[in-house]
Amino acid sequence: MIIGTVRGNIVSTINHPFYTGKRLLVVEKEDFAGKPGGYLIAMDGGVGAGVGERVLVVDEGTSARQIVGSANAPLRSIIVGIVDCVSVEG
Image (cartoon, rainbow, N blue to C red; front, side, top):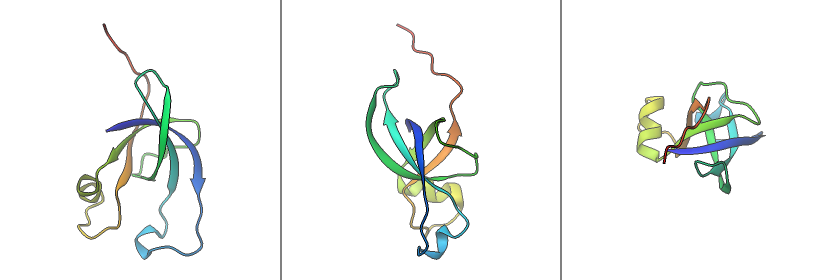
């Protein structure tokens, strides 16, 4: 899983039918301290994530397809949670 911050929305007029009615978001990946490092595009998995929120992302196609219940979905990354806080010990 990846922690990241939602930086924006993606809007497309033409897309694969699977994505009709679904939200695609730009997520800036972070380490546990919040230091940015790259980005990915993820579908909101029903958690209602918005711009500026820290999120938990599954970035593995088979797991993402299992979450949406479709073995043929053209999907790799899905947002599965909104992060309230990160606590690092040590």
